[in-house]
Length: 188
Length: 188
Image (cartoon, rainbow over all chains, first blue to last red; front, side):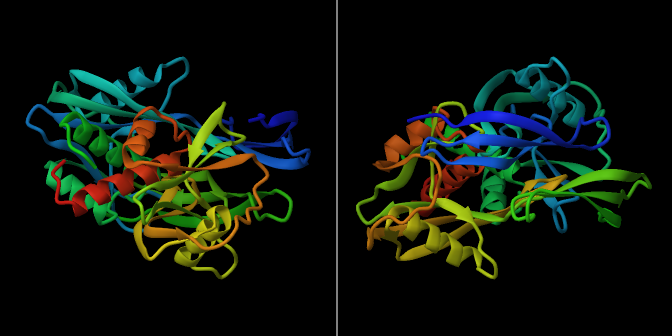
């Protein structure tokens, strides 16, 4: 299959210092010959999330409020990559800062474009197991959040009930459950 | 927990007729008293995706190119909601147009904010089972795409290998696998 080609890029918008949002207009050539001159391209920070399972088999979650969500949502730890930071290092840092836990085993659950058309940042999702408390929580989030330790059945029920209301968090939990199931040799 | 409050909204950017991208700046009050005056809010179209399983137990996927992704990706059917259209009707229409299939049983896999901070549209994800071909494909996508019928083990392997490179598609497949597993009474 032939790739789409970027013929030109024009900056359209920078909010503040551009850390959280920049928008460009791209001129894009499609394999069928179509050229679209005003293709919007959204640049937001790349981020990590992690489903972390403690040594006791419990999952570290938050109950919190988010601006884009009505009412409370469940969340997994995560945050934006800092400059020069690898996704794994960012995930380990966010887990430590937000929960006070470190984990023995880390594995990637994949790297994803948030929006297949407009970009919107890259999501790096992880599964961490063998997590244990090592320090106090040191989070800088503006929202209220409460740390919860949920059992695997509680996590499955919360996911099925739609309590993880933000797409990367639901994706992270579902991908982790599929991975853990495969490891146990189960058939879906 | 206290909600975040929108104190003011200012339009910042409308690309073209605004169908695909508008940006606003919100003034947001956090429960801790912090007020942020330049909170970016991104308005992109709400969309549906569906993992559709045929009467023979095969999953309808595409191999395709997308602008935000390097190389080929696997995809599930989906697209933007039309004006006044319900998410379920949109998912049924997209499945029919993109694959030529209709399905007997539809269930929601949840409603998700794509970005917990900046919005970026709402994802409505579905699982459809009992799918069967009813018409020719009538897709309007600009990208090359090839329809595939994959077995459940092929889908699981492709998901684990990161071949679904766009977040809502990986989320849709993972959530569907978890749902199907729960239905079979399996334990994760």
